Amino acid sequence: KDDKKEEKKEDKKEEKTEEKKEEKKDDKKEEKKEDKKEDKTEEKKEEKKDDKKEEKKEDKKEDKTEEKKEEKKDEKKEDKKEEKTEEKKEEKKDDKKEEKKEDKKDEKSEDKKEEKTEEKKEEKKDDKKEEKKEDKKEEKTEEKKEEKKDEKKEDKKEEKTEEKKEEKKDEKKEDKKEEKTEEKNEEKKDEKLSLIHISEPTRQAEISYAVFCLKKK
Image 1: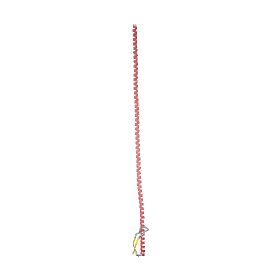
Image 2: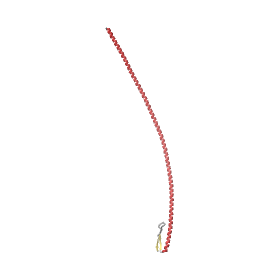
Image 3: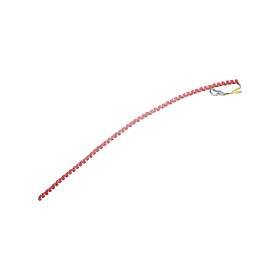
Image 4: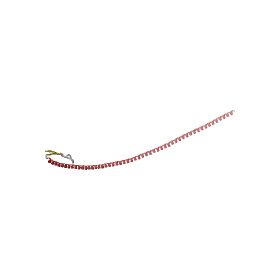
């Protein structure tokens, strides 16, 4: 019985040991599993890290590509700006050329205008000279006409004066004749009266008279 007991005990012990062994095995298995899990998690972590790295790389690539795109855009913009500036420069050059052409045209037109004005001035001067010549001619002709008129007037005056002189002579002759006749008549009528003074004719006209005084002896 004791042996049996002991055997039982030993069997129990063995069972226990086996159980322990099995437990240890199970623990080991679990540990392994956990290790595997950990490995897996680490792998996953590493994968994640790799993924992150790749993402970063990709992001970097994308950034680079974007930068390149932006650089290209900037280059295009700069090219456009340069083209615009060149176009503006060309436009300015064209404008300057046009301005020069216009200035030349204006200068030519101004020169032509000045020439025309000078020609007009010369024509005016010539016209004025001709007018002056014509005025001088007219003045000369008028002077000649006036001279002729004056000559005619003078001739008329001279004729009138001559006529008046002749009339005066005739009047004097008639007066003398009348005086003589009167004297003769008075001498005949009354020899006592004597002639003192005879006045000159009153005016130089057709009707004139003279006054004479007689004195008794």
